[in-house]
Structures are given as structure tokens and as C-alpha cells.
Image (cartoon, rainbow over all chains, first blue to last red; front, side, top):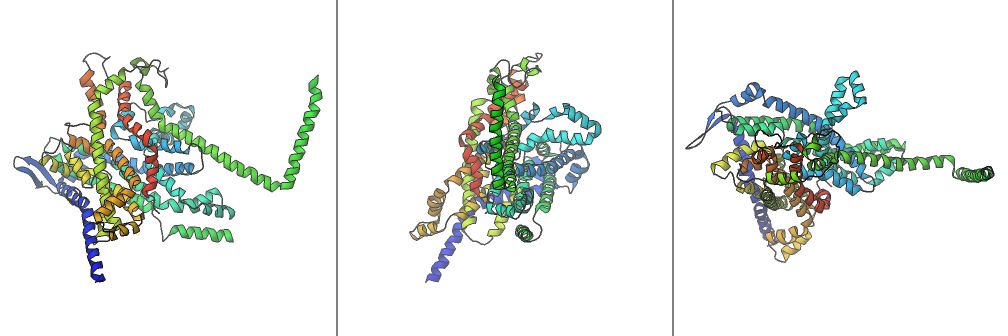
Length: 306
Length: 330
């Protein structure tokens, strides 16, 4: 009796689960999974609009060859390279910057709420048009330091170094503006670390520097993976991203070779590049070996006890 | 004449104080004092460095916005005058008049508000339902579907947008808000996986005993969800709604494609700002009617002002909201 009732309840629970899931599942199948595979299919096709409907002719790898070896070399490939470079430079900088700011904000400070609120403003207002308008007026570039005497002096010795510095200063505001959510994520992770760990380590004679490497970093390490993926997706989905613009332009291209098929091929190349980037950061940042946190703490304790 | 007389007294007092200090030092022990100074230095010195860094970074954060505000009040002479720094010599409001016109103002901001409101409401509802299913039920294929939720986060919208757009244009839905609303209602909206995971994490932390008590009292699963779980989740619903609202407000890529010029939001108007301005104000052959930085910055300020106002009022919910989401793990 009770067995059947439990079964019935379990059965109704299953049905309720699927009922709650239904909107998402329907949307997933029709609006995500189907478009995902259909755009893959389109990337191997030439798409034509006729009165009877949409015609797709299989053309093999022609769209990909066009994108990477022929016409795409003029616009798509440079855009892709600049996206790649931008992500590779921005992501580590955003990680370090947001970690440093989170550590600063973790201390008991007056006006902490004010600073936190300021650093979060870009999350609220960041949109493609706003950034492009501000950048058209040169407002988000700090290129002015080029004229500083010190910079001039360094330039005479090592122009490449100055080029790097100038690139950083040119992009520093954008990097800062991309870090809003990341700062808060790191801050929350830091606040969850047990203070007694730091006290114990300082009693054992560890410096703040050692405490950072032995306690802080292992604990927030899983967060760095999450934050880097978030950052890459954020950069990748930004509408002012040059690759996004080209894909959109080609969607409405009038010449017969472009259009949906070519756009789909571009989008898929872009997707694979993004996946590779995510894989790269995941591989570098993921924890090596089982449970690094505990072992490093244990090692630290042992060393202190000796 | 008094100074020489006063000097010995001062010296005496000083030496008295010094010897008192010295006595204190010897009592406490030299090592102790050094430690004390060090900790003080570490505490205050570190604090000062932290303040200096935070102020510097805060200034760099806000600099573009400050510059935008200052430029937007300048007339065409102030912009080109190298002697004019952050403060305009005269305040002019002409830029704003023109910017409001160019941005098609009341209409575009109302469009944005309505669209973002509906999208945020739909997205919050569908994500909450999906998150609830994942958090509260064990069903076949659960982990696979959970994996798929996360996987969709990695697929750039460019990949999905092309076929979606084809379908929308096939059914003549381009130019209306319907496709966007449908996408949000079926849980595939902007950053959808983030919201589903937020609800999943949050619902997992809620105690089950209340649900069970309500079920014993005869509440259906839907009633438990609506009357109990959602009622206990107002803070997280607010966070989800606010972020969804802001992100959808700022979205221009898909919105622009689907809107196709038939309806326009505030950020989309800002995207076409220069073209709209030239259509409205530019007279061929005259340079005075040309668009300048000040007008563009006035337009940008108008475009972000609604969001800044929202943020000013709900700042706490935004920043502390992320803490409530449990996105940082247990």
C-alpha cells in the first residue's frame, strides 16, 4: 500500500518535473538545438530565396575556403585575429585586475560600498553603441601618456616596450569596464575564506605574500576558471566585436556567394575559435591533481610545525 | 628675552617625556615595540595604499563618464579650444535638445522600457521554472539536460541567430517584438544559462520540509512552486529580473536584426545616432550644422541616463544580488 503510494508520488513528481522543464525544453529543442545543427548544415550550403521557399544547395567546404583563404582574408581573417589577440590579452589582465581589486575591497575600508558601486556601473551601462560612441570621442582611451617625458625617454631605449605600455593604456578603461561582475564574484569568494586560516598561518610565521599563495589562491582558483569563461563569452558576445559585425553584414549581402550559408560558416569558425580559447584557459587554470587546496594547506601546516 | 628662559623648560619637559617613553619601552621590551610599530604600519600603511589605489582606479573608471558629461554641455567653440579642460566656459543645452530629437526620445525609451520589462519578466519566469525542476526533482536525463544548459552558454549567439532569423523572416515575424518575447518565454534568452543556474543553486538551498508540509496539507506541485517557493525567493527573483532587464536593454545585436527598423530601442537609436542627426539637422554646404562631439556625448548621456537612474535607486540590489545568487559556490 505504502509502496504503491510512494511509487505514485514518484511518478507524479516525474511528471511535475517535466512540466516545469517543458518551456525551457521546448525552447531548447526548437530555438537552440535545431538552429545549432541547422546553421552547421547551412555552412556547407548555398542558400537561395525563391518564391516557393528557401533552397539550399550543398557546396561542400566552399564557404569555409572562401572565409579563410579567399575573400575572407580581407575582412574576416584580420577581424578574427584581432578578436583572438584581444581575448588573449584582455582575459588574463581582467582576471588579475579583478582579483587585485577584490582583495583591496575585502579589507575593512570606509566607503567600501561606494567603491563597489562605482566598479559596478559599467555592468549596468555597457552596451555596444555606448562604447562605440565613447570611443569615437576618444573618451575611453588614455593615449595622452604618449606625450609624457618619461614615456618618451623609455621609447628611445625600447620602442616595443612602450608600444605594449601604450596598448595597455589605450585599453585599460575597457579592461576595467569589463571587470565589474568578475570583481564581485572574486570578492564573494574571498569573503568566504575562514579568517582563522590567515591567523593560523601568521602565527606559524607566514608572510602576507605566502598566505596569498598558500591560502587565497588555492581557494579562489576554481573561481578563476569560471571568471575566465565568463570573460571570454562576454568579449565574444559583445556586439561591437569586429567578427560579429562581419557576420551580420554578410547575412544581408546581396552578392550570390555570400548570404546565410557564408554567414553560417563564419559563425561556426568563430564558435570553434571561441571554444579553443575557452579550452586553453580552462586547461591552464584548472586545478591540477586531486584537491590541490587541501594538500597545499596540509603542506603549509606541516612546514609550520617543524 | 623670554625665549632663552623658556628653552630649558621646554627641553626639560621634552626630556621628561622622553625618559617616560624610554621607561615604557624598557618595560614593554624593545621587540614588542617594534612589533607594535610594524603592525600599525602594516595596518595603516596598507590601508593608505589601498585607498590610493582604489581612488586612482575609481577615477579611471569614471573618467569617461565625467568627460562625457562635461563635453555634452560644451558649445562648438569650447570643444576645439585646447584651454578648456573639464569645465565648459558656458553651459549650453542646445546639444540636449538636438540629442533628444535625434534619439526619437519618448518613443525609443518607452520601447526599451516595455521590451526589457517583458523580456526580463518572461526570462525570469522560465528560468525559475527550469531551475526549480533541476533543483527539486530527480528525473531521467537530468544530468544530461543540466550539461546542455551549460553547453548552450558557450555557443555564441551568432551561430544560433542565423537559423532563428531565417525562421522568423519565413513566418513574417521580423519587425515585431514577438520573436524576442518567444525566445525569452521559452528560456533561450540572453545569458539564459546563467539565470537557470542561479535559480538552480538558490532553490537547492531552500529547505524541503516546508514543501513537504504543504504537500501533506494537499497542495499540488504547482501550488508549492507558486505559493511557497517563489514567495520565499523574492530577493533572487528581483536580482534575476534586474540583471535580465539591464542586459536586454543593452542588447543591440539580435534586437537590431529582429527589429529591422520597424521598432527601435534607445541603444539602437544611439547606434544610428550620426545618421539620424544628419537626416534631421545637416544642411549640405554648411559646416555649422555638422554633428560634433558635444552632441554625440549628449546623446550618449541621454541613452545611459535611464539605466544610471535605475542603478542609483537599486544599487544595493544589483551589487549585493550576486552574493545571493550563490554563483560563487558553497
